[in-house]
Amino acid sequence: MANDVTPPPTPPAPPVSQPVLRTAPAAIWSLVLAILSFNCGLLFTAIPAVICGHIARSKIRKSGGALGGKGIATAGLILGYIALVVGVMGIPLLVSMIQSDRERLNRLATERKEIASDDGKIKVTVPGTWTKLPELNKKATLQVGDKSKQMYLIVITDAKADVSDFTLEKHHDLTRDRMWQKMKNASATEPIPLTIDGHPALQDELTGTENGTNVVFLHTTVEDGDHFQQILAWTLKSRWQKQNQLLREITRTFRSEK
Image (cartoon, rainbow, N blue to C red):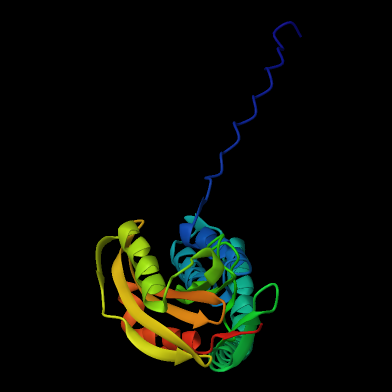
């Protein structure tokens, strides 16, 4: 019939947008910290990772669907607990390594070894932690020290033929005065006589500032046959009271071979 008109189709209802769940920040932190725990120290970040994971799961459960990230929080918890287990198991190994290292350092500190000059004629006996340090003084025959404790010793050899008519006292005074001139606020003790390697020697202390650093030198001169051996041992002024006895002991071990 003419009046029969087919009505247009009803347009489909617009889709109902689903609300986007906000991921719980604690869940993200849990996963991040758990991953970091395998790179930056197991226990230091694994424990916070586990705590954040539990907090995140609790907040998600109580949010009534307003918060998401349960899977992320669960992953953070799993990785965090794995890191915790590995970290706890590694504690005895870490303690053993620290103890072993301390024992090694103590052993080296008490052990003694002999270090000789390149030609083998000049020798001193030093703790096991000491080594040759060839950069201390270009004129030195022997250069040794312990950088970690800032203790050093050098030996400078002068042939008597090069310093004719020099006595032990004159050579000692000359080398002391040269050092004195290079230091600021310098002071020195009176030289005392002693015997080193069967030879007469003089020894005093020089205190002052060198290159902006407060230092104390144990200055010793040995009259060794045809040579004067100048032995300089030094450390920081702040360490002198603790370390000067060791520097004196090392100086007394000086030996020379013709």
